[in-house]
Length: 339
Image (cartoon, rainbow, N blue to C red):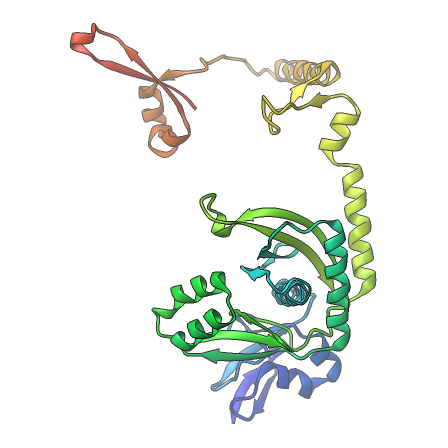
């Protein structure tokens, strides 16, 4: 028997090798259906993790940040399974949870469009409705590589190769016909993912390197209740209405052009006037409160930034000019920098 400390400091005894999922089920079926992952002695773990010694266990639901991450990670696998069903030639890259939702990268012949996303969503609904259970298994490094080569998943082979050198078993998750290389954690089944939406589709280079293959990245969000998804969509729509980029253009405050740069706004007369009025207000307030204004040059000798410490820490981000202060046969350079 082992002692397991649960929420509120309650200690219960369980048979050795019991899992957090089984503990949740022993407490209530409602908790078992809602639990997403577990904290075992402070470390986020899969619900299938066997407990072999006394420990502290916190059962995580969608209300916990770590629980949300497991929930969204599982939804990314549902997305990948749907894509492989509809587009068998697609190659899988990675599909993590992110701060808000999840994404999955695919190597496909052409990027998905809005119609493709609707088809994928429909297939995802079929998968969730089936209530497929998710299982975890491990393979020895070489067996894992052989398996991934056999199912022709080159990106997964690359990832597994990096872990193979450690000599540790490599973990996989399986839901029906779909198998993915993954460390987890994941839900016990796909059933709790009651509501989801694929929100965006963009390009992304494999491992963030422009020298690598460009992949198709599909973003999404999911929730255990349809009402939560509806609330999320409403919140997003309201936020878009107040988006500064949208309002600024509609109010003719600023614009952008490609030959200057999309992140570099050009202030139009109305926007420039607002800045002018704000600047005057700031200057009047400073003067009213006895502040005295000084002006420093836009650039200075590097000596100044060496004294301030900027030279050592931010040199790579400075614009540096070189000045010849003596004839070419006796060159001495003074460096000028713009922070």
